[in-house]
Length: 387
Image (cartoon, rainbow, N blue to C red; front, side):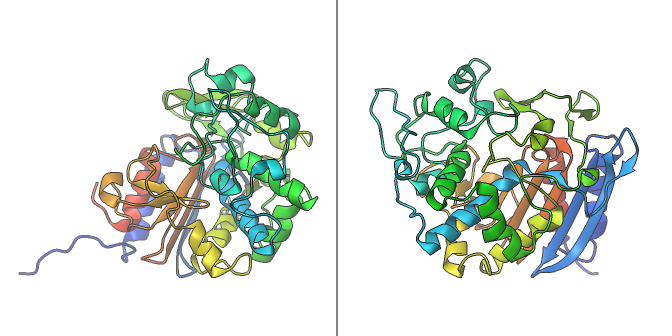
């Protein structure tokens, strides 16, 4: 009599399990379309484009579909920022006022603290996001954009609005997911005299061959139609669309990507392919080349906020990603040291360095593609975790 063994990560059956998860999400239209890539040591073990890029016209999803990347933008910009640190153009402990002298947010008591490049990268600058607040929160009252809405809004105006709101804590004393990467992007641009899109293209996109990753969409025919969670199935987003999330709601203006007057959001503004994202994650997993040095890539993906708690149990933060501290607290089969994050247009991705495993899942459905049943089931299917 032979003992039965539980499924293991990336066993011979994991592709079938992933297919089942994808099918169970696509068929009832909780997820409209998705591109899933699973790689180990750079070898793609699973690749699938499923569902529709545009449901109403029955246009199928394809591997070369372009997605609004939302927060998948952040590690791209973080990589470029650290390349500038390596080049000596900026320093991790430089004050932001060195580059943006007018950006001087204050604490509630009226005092003006120093905010550094490092604190922007680690989301410890005392800033926040409007979607993390109730509808009458201070960012909403000030008209701050999270980088997903208000087409045509300039960086100068948004920085002024952000700085008008008191900081939520003294920089370096607390963690809060935030517009910090938008501020960082402007600091990078001013430090170099180049635009943020120019920097990203030169420092990350071209070296890594991320051919379709950009702040503009060069081939609109491949841009997926965005959808949002609905009561029974996903619904097409309108021109201005709010999706409940946590205690607040995320404000989307999908047409923002076509407005050249919109500020280049270092936190949410890029577009690209699942394959582009895989190239970035694989480069960082393998040591950062040719974009950044191995020690810099290691710093990006190592918990940099010891002693501070995030709002996600078991997770810390590096210089570009959430970093797994405690798999039990996080209720995940991933190994400690795994780095991951999502994107509110419907994306998730992670790298488990213990397994040399990289997973990219881009969907056109907010918020179900980012958090909840679908990404959790996808992860568990890959690891062979029993539901």
